[in-house]
Image (cartoon, rainbow, N blue to C red; front, side):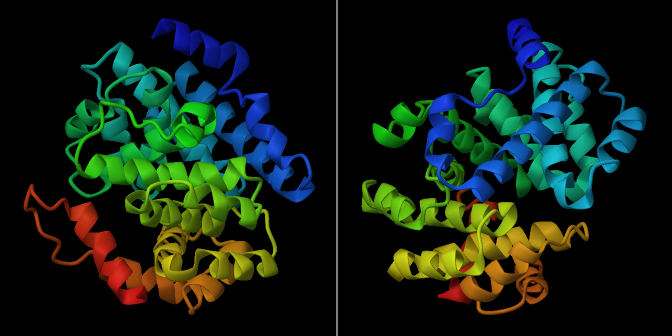
Length: 307
């Protein structure tokens, strides 16, 4: 644990060169990825140095609004690391339910990445958050880390951590899908081929992750998004789920971006503001049945809307 914090402070949340190779031929995608990774790493370091909310929030808010979600994601990494070192503090939960609430999705994505890097049990951490809806996003961040930083074992060999069970495995694949978007260099044909190599039972969730990465992160032009929809074929409704989720995340904090708008128009068939309204309205009346997680029911409702 202390070694992890030391490494973050000295070297950052480094990107392995193997993960950057696919991006070498696409300057726009590569530059965007590096910008995102730098922001996440810098904010993880900032958080570890001083996690007091009254000093942390102004530093995060100083970032360009379009990058704010990534800044809060870095904070999630740092807070999860500190919570693991001193578990009685529960900083991640307090921050996500307090001043960081508008960015809860990014915070939990980052926390999941941090847990994966420390090789810790994400399920145990999720339960401690006491957030039946967004707490599952921890598994998404965990899956992204494994797909991006442990690409061979998770994507090529398609291994899944034995720590994940039930619905957590599906959310893990949302993160894996996001990682495939990055490691494929936003090359649509490579994305499709990579997902097609997985068992059919995992492909829908992987496409949902791709949709979110495409809609939220950007780095590609509209014709590429149009081609992505064609390649997804019968899974295009799952792409729409991810893109609509990204629209909701951005509009929820007034964090708008042109790439999010045209991704929503292409993949969801509506402006991003309308897609965000659809996603947000479907949160109402979600079941608290432990056998059907609220997060699962929410995404099922969104999928039915776009099928």
